[in-house]
Amino acid sequence: MLAAKRSLFVWSSSAQRQAVQPLPAMALAKLSKVLISDSLDPCCREILQAGGLQVLEKPNLSKEELLTQVKDCDVLIVRSATKVTTDVIRAAERLQVIGRAGTGVDNVDVEAATRKGILVMNTPAGNSLSAAELTCGMIMSLARQIPQAAASMKEGKWDRKKFMGMELQGKTLGILGLGRIGREVATRMQSFGMKTIGYDPIILPEESATFGVQQLPLEQIWPLCDFITVHTPLLPSTTGLLNDSTFAKCRQGVQVVNCARGGIVDEGALLRALQSGQCAGAALDVFTQEPPRDRDLVNHPNVICCPHLGASTQEAQSRCGKEIALQIVDVAKGKALVGMVNGQALSSAFAPQTKPWITLAKALGLLLRTMAKQVNGSIQVSTLGEPLQNAGNYLTPAVVTGLLAGAAQKDVNLVNGLLLAQEAGLKVTSVHSNKVPELSSDTGLLQVALLGSPCRAVGSVQGSTPVLQELNGATFKQLVPLAGTLLIYRAKASNPSTLSAVIELLGKAGVQLQSYQSSSAVGGEEWSVVGLSSALQNLSELKQLVKEAFQLTV
Image 1 (cartoon, rainbow, N blue to C red):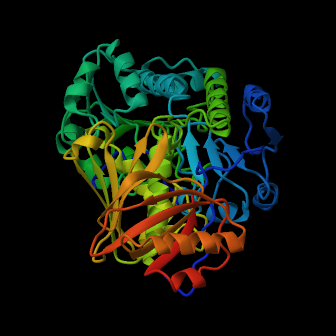
Image 2 (tube, rainbow, N blue to C red):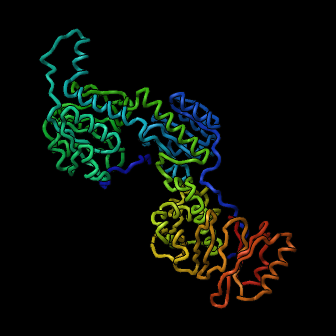
């Protein structure tokens, strides 16, 4: 299902466990090849090439051609013409990033991209001014019938009486959606003396008041407006936002502008309202089907139409091309991540102060899965301490990538981890508490637990090093760095012969012991963590000496 970025309207172990492969430091592998499948400003290509990326420009591809060209590309950049469907995403074997040079992403199947772990990005500010200015031009054109009068003149007529207009001074403009474009429209039309009212369930009334918009419930907005303009994404909750029912509630002679997305205004209902006189005029830059096949609405004398020109200015095209190129280069170089439509947890993976926490979360998830043999049921991720108060939103997906690493049929990363966990039947919850042991108060703790079992791991970050502090209730005497290949076993406490036997086994296997830490005793048993130069090929001999043993590579 095609989706948009901003939900603006909420109207809604085992016999022999081998070492697990290292977790990637980043959720994205190296980006090298970029396909641009729509016409973009040349600066987009130039910036990408200067950033060390190979660029292939192929505008106006057929669907079959796109399926072929995208196969070996790491990045796909589009405007609105290219439809990035499930088929395209399935065919893109290497694709890691889809960049939309513009705001709306209803031409991208975001759900399918997320499922495959593909990051979707846009440039939400790139065309805001151009779209806002077009909207204002549409309002003025409706008020004075400028396009109709100009067409009449070209036909050789001089009909002054036919095109009697109205002043905008004192008229009420209803703005549905008060994001970047909506607020730009508001401030511009206020300069014409219009009263601006609006609705947006995300923007607080106190915030909209700062740019001169009084927020009201929708039911109060309909009968008050002389003009209504929509600036929402196309979502199930906004499809047909203006329909037969809402038109009936509007002031007779209301005029409607849609420069956002086709389908927000029910085109059949709009035509009926125009024919009855309930709606005096409409200005449309977008349509449910583009170009529209049904010409009744386009040909209506009180309708002004444009062929989706909202972002069609030199400035907007240059800005969007430049912004998406810079965003892609930053991702490729691991510098920053902005303009995310999905995979918000990835942004934290690029921040230096959170990178080690992401690594810790992945490692604890991997440790829990390896120890538990099979993970099912409920997983609880707990962040402890004030420094981690808002960290659950990125550490929880990171834990899941460790839990599912190597076990899922699909590649797991910070983009698709939570979705794949849900599909695997895992219930993952995140909780936070400011209470934390005094020794960890400056950094905080991360705890991952498999509910209904004793499996629980607690870790933290010391400097920039992820460390294990506790395993199944046993606290380590010295913090355990979670790096490299680790052999972890549970055995009878205070038994030096066990470590001697382990050292002997390592010697026979040609594996070096690089570090050793042990935990406090719980129930007469203790955990030991041994850092290895490489993974042991077989743990069967060791398992005869201890209660439990496994190894993993972080």
